[in-house]
Each structure stands twice: as C-alpha cells, then as structure tokens.
Length: 69
Image (cartoon, rainbow, N blue to C red; front, side, top):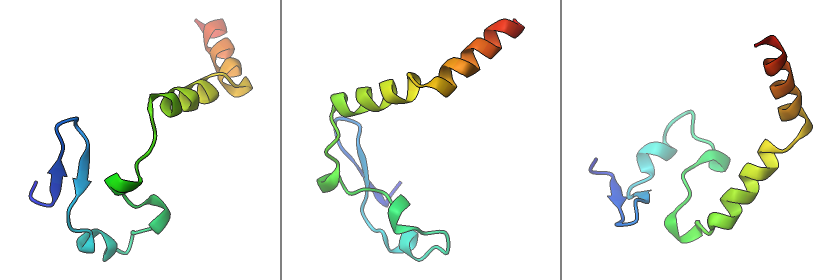
C-alpha cells in the first residue's frame, strides 16, 4: 500500500493520516498510534495476556465448557 511505511521488524505506520482523520468513524482514542509513541515491550504484552487470561469469568467459561463436553 502506498500510504504505509513498513519497517524491517514488521511494524507498519501510516504515512498520511488525512484520509483516516476525515472519516466520520474516526475517533482519536482508537486512531493508529505513531511509531514514536509505541513503547510496549514483550513484558507489557505478556502482562496484558496474563491479566486477561487469569480472571474469574475466564475460569467460569472454561468450567462450563468442560462440563458440557
């Protein structure tokens, strides 16, 4: 795509945001984050995954699914 810049490590950044910002569905909170503001490491992604996977609703869902099998 012509509007994106791909880095060697696989990250992608939009070059021109005017088309995205002009959309009626555009929301600043959900907009693509520029590379300069991306500061999550592997630890941050692992911590998010653990906190989402190890909670009571997840265990309740898994126990209900295993009972029906």
